[in-house]
Image (cartoon, rainbow, N blue to C red):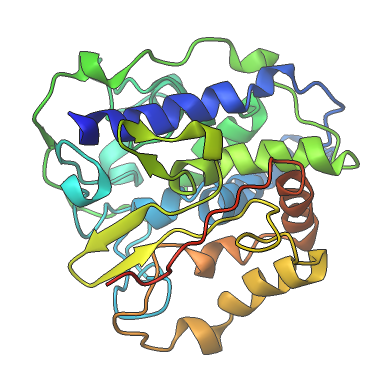
Length: 317
């Protein structure tokens, strides 16, 4: 039961911690000259988000477990995950991220895709397991969600079907589904780096991994302080403390150090090496392709969270 509550509580708490509907600000979308330009801009925005922020492509594709940060295998984008998530990741059973290319979604309307992304309800009306972070995505702007939908509509159709989920509990135990209206979610002005960084941190679902586990599940008094251990067949790795604690977190990091960490770990030189047992779940290869502006905003927001002293052994025995 503890494993069941872990995943559910992490995602629901992310919503409570980041009530983005109260983040009012100026919309900063560039203006298009005509409908064709507008669609191109929307698809480009969706591609950026799906690959580098919300990690839709990273999760719904086959990842190369032998390379650093397990980058997506070219040609598998959106065609479904290569391996299932199970009890080692806190899932009560087995869930494999499905195919989201036009082959699988050809009969889905835009509204049905949006409902799955932001409400956790699929075309059949079934509740999705909250491994799909719909609680966080429900706090994004409608334009950003529409952009993601527009982009995945352009993916190369991949004729592949993943295994159906096999859960040990009913969907009713996953917790309450997101409420609210996407139309009420506003994009913070990027000039307000903290609020804009909060928006991006929510969209990137950083709190899902970077929250430590206590005896009864996730310890939300220590959010972002890391310690959760991914114990998968290929390697075992603990999630880092990203609070501004100087001794055990990133309190001593400058903005430049933070950005360079992402950029360096996304470089071909680093990603193409074979780390063996010293690998990571963290998708540096894609997060590191975020713009400097966005990474700096995330850094600015993380500087405002409570510093937590929590020393994490990166590769526990």
